[in-house]
Image 1 (cartoon, helix red, strand yellow):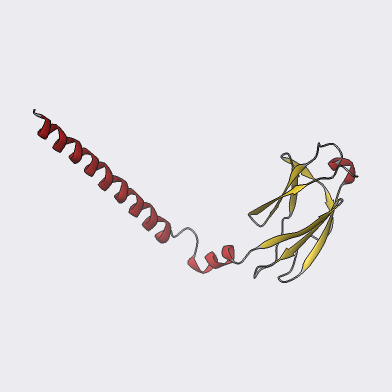
Image 2: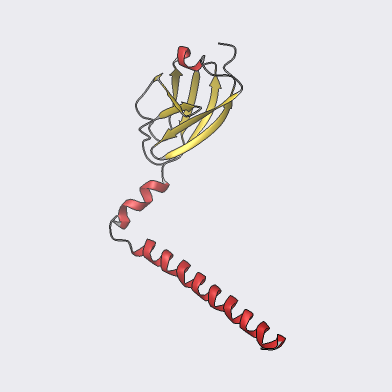
Length: 133
């Protein structure tokens, strides 16, 4: 094989790899759209769940529901350790709630650090400094 044939063979291999890659992407997207395990009418609910961490003051975290649905299953973490809290079990759309983190637990960590809040499958992370407690 001369240099020109080698070059043509290399281009062919790259072309075949690109066709396979593009076909795989289209197949994946089609499978996701046509997956019948979850009814399509339930899908918008996932996109209507949103929240914001408005403020962190000492051990009090203020969270606002900016979405369309009630937020449940709130959990707070520092360094992958779940932190106990007192406060509501849910947040209605358009409402804000205060959550009081367990002071004894949060004193165990070094600061500054990050607080991770999870709710209804979403996650938010905020920088915190509880060193003044």
